[in-house]
Image (tube, rainbow, N blue to C red; front, side, top):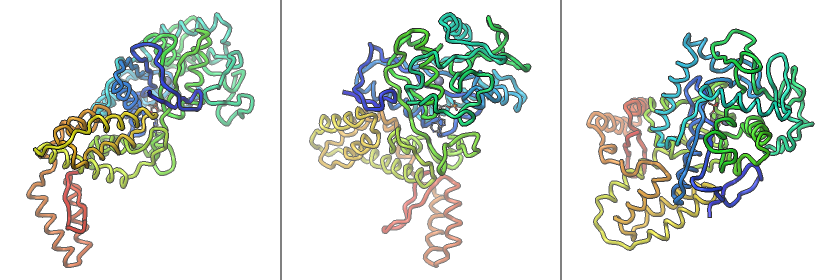
Length: 458
Ligand code: AMP
Ligand code: ZN
């Protein structure tokens, strides 16, 4: 029995798929810059969901969209188009920018051991589908025209805001949304006219322009997954606007429930606020690698916190994750060389592992079971390693690839370590610290313990 927390009902529910394969849609990247590690947390969470369902023997159809048009600097359909703005800044075409950042994103996903979806779907390749949805909405009387676009009338859709429990009439203008020519604060653009010259624009029955951002997810999810599908994921900020609007426009068209389970990942925070590009505090995987961290260290850090809890990023936390990861690495290598006989506890541990994952993707709990297995002295090493590798089909830490040479310390580093030890004995801590930094720059970290210093590859 798999339980998932459904934002729509505000409780954990038993997951019942509509049919096989399970159909999942995840809101993907807006490809105007690198995806930062906050974004990566979102895809990591979707990856854990997919892998958990697969561990339960289910087949999956997972779709992720690529937003390469229409996402304005404000989610409420105002401001500049993020893609057009980036293209202008970099002196390139929006299409080039999109391809470049998408490739960088795909590379990061591979490094993070995040499974590629069944389909990547690009907004600019589905303009026809989006126009068709607007035509249907127009026919059913859900739209109206202003001087800058075609809008969805949120008051015509019964139950608007149910996902976020929005009290629509209490929303203050100017707080979330500038009303402008819109009739109601919560109305949103389906089609925006090209009022200024822009690179990305298409003909439509309403004039030259481009689709509103919320529309792409309805158009593409329904095209590839059907009018009603199982699970929709995204970051928490999508609850009150983007996903609320997706539900409104999709259900207005079909008259049926759009998605059964809405799952939202909480943010990765830098200090106390959302990690975001606009706040200028966004870290990329590349930056972490330059500081000698491995993508697996970040994955381990993510595993330690439930997806519905905010996670404050700090290098201290990442260091702790790296230490734990290196410890696993060491133990796994020892285990492979261990020829002792032992008892088989596979069934019992596997059950415990699955119980944690099936309890709304409790990765921290699953990780605990992983450690219990690793530290169980009586458990047959041969069976143990098999089970850990099986667990890794969800955890994605690369247990099979863990090698001895990761742990070997080159002579040059050892020389610096010994030199530092000498300085510490002479109580010359300032110089010793300088050596620690040099060692770190070369990709190794030191841990001073009771039995002396331990050197590990970063
Ligand atoms: P974007 O490229 O801004 O459209 O975002 C792509 C995905 O990353 C969306 O699902 C967002 O909700 C998610 N996201 C953005 N910032 C964060 C963050 N700091 N922590 C976790 N997820 C995030
Ligand atoms: Zn979306």
